[in-house]
Length: 148
Length: 119
Image (cartoon, rainbow over all chains, first blue to last red; front, top):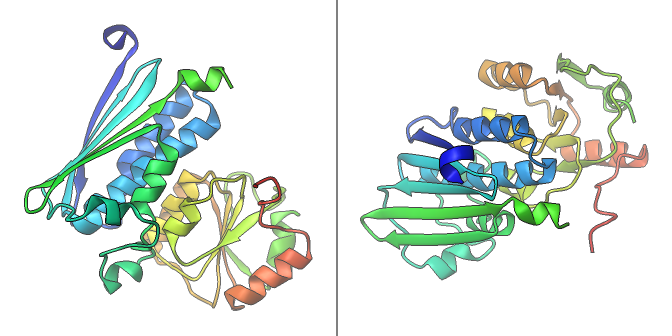
């Protein structure tokens, strides 16, 4: 199915540019809108990916975002070579953040990023090694919407 | 309420009039300086009230399909922020009032939080 009806995107997320953070998510959002995906699904996909993009900019000096869209689902991989996450369980807790004060001044680092990503996706997997980087996988199912 | 009525209620100055103009009807709002807190609650909210000024405020509003951003406490967004809002068709206004006061004034006029149908 993915060969026929699938779309594939790859984005470089610039870690040095806080202003441009979110542009990849915006492009994916616009694409999903054009595909006629249900507005709520579009929004939760955009938010989950946006939080991931922001995380890569804030914590990891940027990275790569890969997006596959098929009639069944949207799959997103966010891959960085940043410092990694020491304790994933702790990082998943709402309100827990290692972001410095400078980041909080920018309106992020409230400790909601990963929990928002989990909340808005159907599947979320984190693979992280301290000192090597982090790979986050997000899947948003599309067929579920039709079943209500 | 109409966005035009918001402008009057909080003594605001419109910096970007947006795609649909000031006659657009909006029914709910949220207020925060933390964008992840805004992103944590997906509801049909059209208005974002914040004291934070940077382009990510506009991106957050865009992700949430919000129509209007109110910058409180007299904070004026920079050019990059204004340009981004223009390109997204989002209304931007600034008010000298503090966030608490902005929320109180708008709530009193019927602009609620939109959480009525949650839990």
